[in-house]
Image (cartoon, rainbow, N blue to C red; front, side):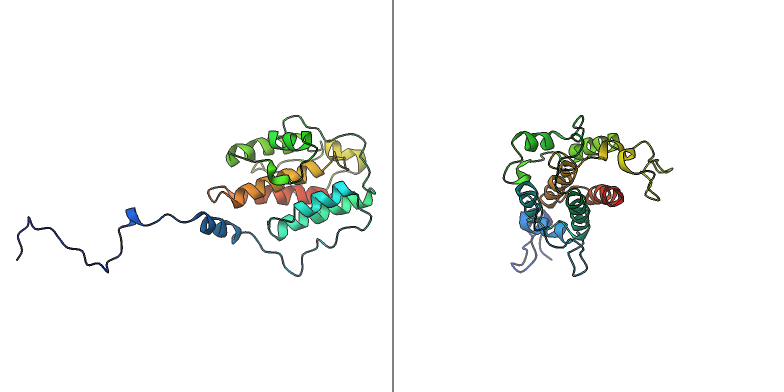
Length: 214
């Protein structure tokens, strides 16, 4: 037997220890996140852009389709498109309340809604999620109630017209800002595998449900 003081020789064919294996590349990390998103299918209800849509709508819609965020986000875009089309792309009664909204949304609006929506960078996705949820909560109409789990109920709609409260807005200063805020968030998640995808998906689902009822 060799002396215990002798160095052990590791065959060159042996796998490297985990501590020296190369880290997962950013491309692979992004692929892991995007693969978790439900892909677009032939059943997607988004449809074509309305032919009479103004430039602000066409540009925003086109940009929000640049990054694949799945069929659920497409359903949100479809609900938003229906509202704007039905309102003839005019401005609503007033502007969507901006108090408490994520600063990235304000930066985007103040820069004349820059050429690329995802210029609104989100360095801290977790903090953005918290801020976004508080803002969304503040926009709910008085008839909407929470369940025992603290989540907003999605069982039945409780009013029409102005009974929708702060959400009863459309046009360039209306619900576009909510849809865009979820797009910013979604793009940030694609680039940050550590983000909570389910929290974002819950936000998309809740906003979609509300817009579909308006």
